[in-house]
Length: 339
Ligand code: DAH
Figure: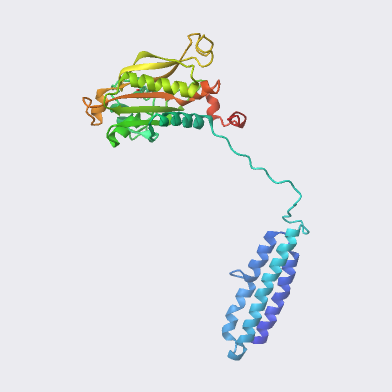
């Protein structure tokens, strides 16, 4: 029995040497290894013979097994070294080639603008809050005091899910979420993506970014709102920028206003960008409507607040002189690498 085993192992040894010597690539090496020591390999298949070997012959048989396994390991190493040398035309390494250069990515202009805005408001004592892009009708419209016939609720303008939830049309949802979560005083800004059923063109997209601001405290006035916005305008666009507020309507603020910045392109003299008016429409704002405070369980007799919301892409387009909104989402590296 022992002789028979030794003979078989001897035959296998010769095949081991031959197969590994002829291996031309890593796949050949792997195949040879499986052929001999894999689950169905020829050496593995001989293992049961050990049981039939006489007791006194077992040490010799064990030694022969170990030798052939060691031979497999040795031949495999040699074959790998040979391929690494490049002599067999396998995966050669040319150490004279110049190294591959890893280039650093750049920040997307939208992310950069969000960071700049958040940094400015943080310095004024605001913290940054986040909310989900899918939200409820309650958070997006009802609690924000939007009348049932408000055009923004129309399915022609808003993406609804079958379960009644929607893709938020404004970051104002985070006002509600924050006030339901925290007790005043509250001072947050919340940047994020919004969605509307618009036909994409140079200034409209189905998704865009806004940054929302909310300040609820005792004795908050319109003067606080105006000075906060003026400070932001000067930090973001530069000292020379002035602001003006025009009466407007938003359901969640009373009084409401639109806030214009003096044109950052022409300094207010009048140009194509500001349509010769000298002013750029930048954001919506106002004093938080008492109904909104009541909707989230805050007593409007005790607390007042201001809120504002502005478009990030609009800010970025003006600051970085970008002419078309679509550039932000086209992923053209020639555009993105400039930031
Ligand atoms: N949510 C408004 C919009 O999408 C922007 C806005 C206006 C936000 C007034 C506010 C605000 O917080 O007070 O057009």
